[in-house]
Length: 250
Image 1 (cartoon, helix red, strand yellow):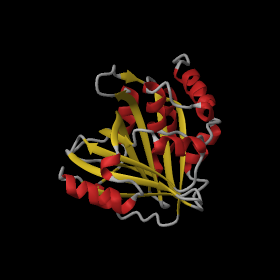
Image 2: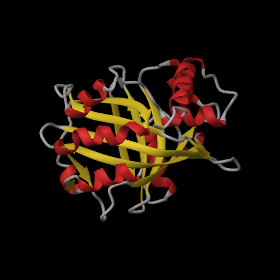
Image 3: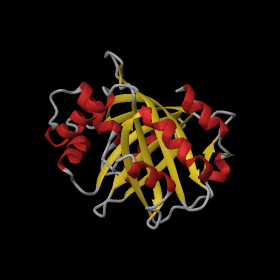
Image 4: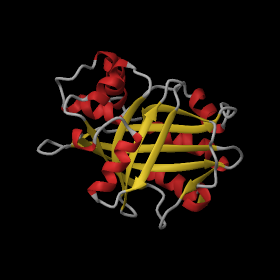
């Protein structure tokens, strides 16, 4: 982590306002998961071509998310079955600034993920209206499922429209349950224009034989805490992750 922080601190920074100017209207979202030991090499390879987001002098920022579903886990089962036009509902807190957003993610039948959010003023009526306007669910039909925390580093390509997030230190917690850490796991998500397949980040990952793979923090948390749910479709993914995080650190 010290080596990673050293590289990140040397990179050119960009503010949140400047980052928001990067338009990604026709974008693809691509995820990768890998052992964190590869990150110093990856960031050393790309550092001259990317800005790093800085907020209040911080570049590695803590997040917390709280996920919701119906008592019968409707949204989880939709995900497990590969259903198109499915939803995810969460509250995300930016621990550095204290802001909390209520968010709805919608994956359509073309494989695109659309996200809507509103600043959470902790007023029940506002949250109810937002959920019922943007999903087929009633606010009272939802219940808290689980939470997670992680650290995130955000990068913006200097030359093309591409944003990258790297998530680290992922851990899960739930009411009246033990906190579960996922050590050594790094999750990279690239949001890019369709023509950005040969960006420096994507070429560096390809050179390391790290290829796109699906990953859901929500599904992973459900697997850790709810043994009665069906996980057949994700069994191979969990085996890969378990093998990956137990690699020897060279």
